[in-house]
Length: 163
Image 1 (cartoon, rainbow, N blue to C red):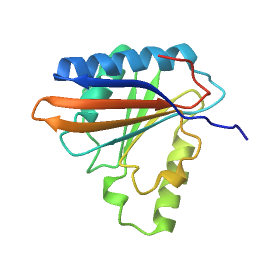
Image 2 (cartoon, rainbow, N blue to C red):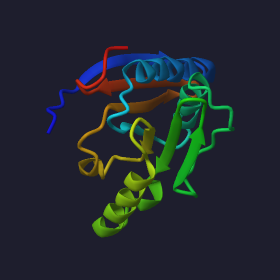
Image 3 (tube, rainbow, N blue to C red):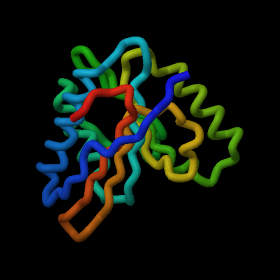
Image 4 (spheres, rainbow, N blue to C red):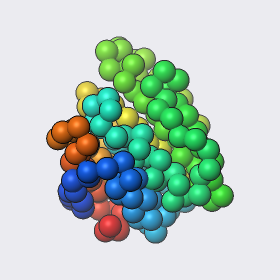
């Protein structure tokens, strides 16, 4: 079992969707640089509705060569996008926050079977269910500061190189 050490690697203020996408793009470069096909790359994403989570993911996807339109999977639970050399699975657990523990475990086990080694799993709405993802690589928290201003805080575990 790996020992994870949390490190804050980025604490930025974004004043635009363009800058939020740019942060996503930089994050994708980090993921690509340190991507290992021996494990799944797990990114935890937290933020209120309208905070810019999907915008950030659009930046990641664009940098990874994914041409599909990226939308929030809130009502679908999971959306998958394939690029040239990468695949992103975008899971939104918002609807599961009040579910029973067994239901959540069942869904997570199913998702784990879908996601292959080397692929990226981005999980939204992890606030109350973090214990189900002890081996995450990157954790992102987006805070709304004002109408167009967001604080983006990114933590990493020691299994990934610095941004």
